[in-house]
Image (cartoon, rainbow, N blue to C red; front, top):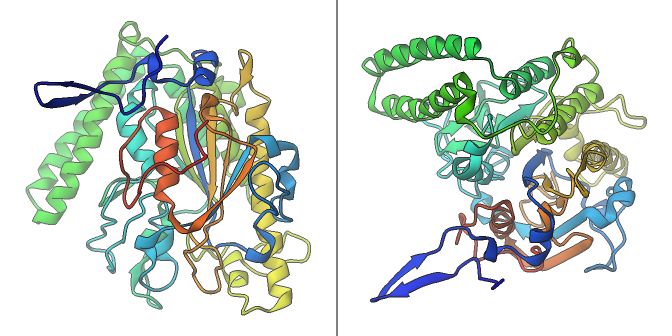
Length: 441
């Protein structure tokens, strides 16, 4: 079979027309992988890292994991560690919010106290969801463990809402995160086991929401009317899904594994590690069942007060410890907190690896990005971002490498590569200059 470039064009009479996705555009490795879906997740950690303990030794395939990444040693061949990229658009403003909220948009947010939030772009996960999200019951799933922060951070003059979101379906629409494991499970169960009766009930509720939203639209200003219009666009997508749920014969989608009601988590745990792992379990189940192929998970909000005293040797929160002022004791605690986050990342990766899928497994057919929007939290530095991609993306990602680039290479280039591997290619994303060399197999 003739192999075609992903950028192949049909030309004639002075007109160039881009081809749709064709099997001939797939690499040999991906063609051999079968019909398993590709999934993409982002696990986000705020507050940066102890940079002296993060970067691996060596580059290419001849590298050794750093002390922080050492818990992933048994997964080394499944990893792609990326060094020296940054988000240029976030190199402005004070504190965390301007960097952290735009980690997946690579844009500059508007400074506001909360009335007119605007991130001036959509996040790369939502770009993928807009293109391919109709293939599963849930276009995407946004998860966290902390409720949305409210009010204004008077230290820097930004609304705290920015620090609670990394997934943006439009420049002014952050997507609400689910923080209760039981609610997430029930949502997955309902999506994977649609019932005609529940679909009718959902349709009635949706009609009420639409009616209320349209009425509200006549009572607000121009800016809020625009936001309501964006909300209604999202709701119209729900209408299609509810209609499909009410008539299963119209849908070719089938769950890849059963989501049974008996395994529902009973409550939100008080233990932080257990809470995080339950949410990661929900990610794994969503991917295994193919209820969604796109998820984001925030370990915590920007400037979170979550204390890590449950770790031996740690006495403070991640945020407070990140402002280490080069104090050796604080730097040690900073490293221990970073390592704990990597251990949770490894927990998810191993669950996905153990989920068999034909001749491969769910991890092989996924891309799981671990990211922070800062390198050194003490200086709020957006250079040399700590980034790791795990999983081969169905054969598209060249794992088992540490790739170090020219300093200040756009992080958006990595997103261009991941979107390509996911099956939703773009010529450019934000300030990208092209795909990140060496990432795609």
